[in-house]
Length: 136
Image (tube, rainbow, N blue to C red):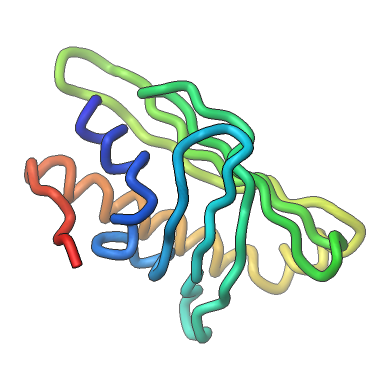
C-alpha cells in the first residue's frame, strides 16, 4: 500500500508511467497547484492545472480543476483502501459539474472514464512489478 501511495504522490513521475497524464508536476500538499497535460483517447494532449484539495496519506488524493472560465468544474480523486497485508485496491474517478459540466460529460465522459481506467491499470502494473517509474 505504501508503494502505491509513493507512486501516486510523485506528480513529477506520473508522466513516466501514466497514459492519461502525459506531463505532470506539482507537490502533494493541500492548496498546491498541479500542472499537467491530459491525453484523452484520440485527442491531442490538453494542458491544465488543478489545486490539491485533500490529502490523507496512504488513503486519498483529491484535486479540483476548472475550465472554460469556471463553466466546467471537476473534482478528481484517487482513493487507496487496504484489503490485507500487502494488498490494496485503488479507485479513481471524477465528479464533473458547473453550468456546462453535463454537456462536457456527455461529449467526453467515456474518454475520461477510459483514461482513468488506463491510469489505474498502469498504476497496478507498476506497483505489482515492484518497479519505479523511469526517471527522465
